[in-house]
Image (tube, rainbow, N blue to C red; front, side, top):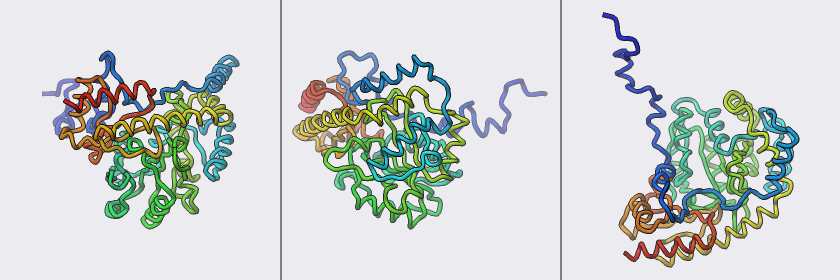
Length: 399
């Protein structure tokens, strides 16, 4: 008897019962988005959860985009991005961080830094290749490695070490299949950053084991007590580093979806191949806005950074005074608070805090297993909201 139309074959049933690809079905939902589904529709919530500046994009940047709309500059750009933007970015990176990139062959404008990370991994990895991921980390790193056919290998960092790399643990995690290492500094969610000594040790690790480093430096402009040092500026590291960054955080341009990657020619060519078949180019209006941001927005960025600096001291002082040990973040706009004295898991603490006091923060476990026992609070929020949140957290702990 013939099989009914549309019925799965026995072989297919044995392999996979659903229509969704197995490697996608196996991915967990974003720990951040999963938690914030609970926030929707709850009145009077003080949210310190979303990693997004509360400032509007500076007016001159918005005005530039409006002008380009009015003059009809809305067509595709080169796959690599506007040459004017790449040339301006090359000058900016040279002046800021001592980097030397050819805008024609070593730079790609992307749809946010997230696309740049995805392209880097897909260009690098063969099925089964391993990628070391320092945790706690941004929630997309491990899923993006998996979607590229790789195997993420988490390597924990700890509060006792200032959330800096444990190089003995990194060495122990390297195998014959290790292909790359993802780093993010200043770090989301901990606010930790790397100094010259840390970067020198990362360089030795990469050279010893012939690793490519994907260096996510999206928060480079948001450091407070020391200046940012870019990994590919070290002699010899440009050839084994894919630098990823963008405009979302420092320039308050999250919704513009504008990022970039700088990489050795062979790797960049491979990334462009994928980009041209999937995205074609980053949004044209965003690229013109990014050019304006690079050339005329330093004062705006400095003013926002100064405001974040005052907020970080307020929130860290407040959390520590409540008995939640919190290190002073060196960059970004997140405080990572230790809640282990409460005896609650991260999810329990955050869910109960939301229910009882209507304060939204992110469970630390969303950022990796070693983030369990913490929560992340974003201080990309006004003083009044931070003070209200601290008051409510104190009331919650008092119960």
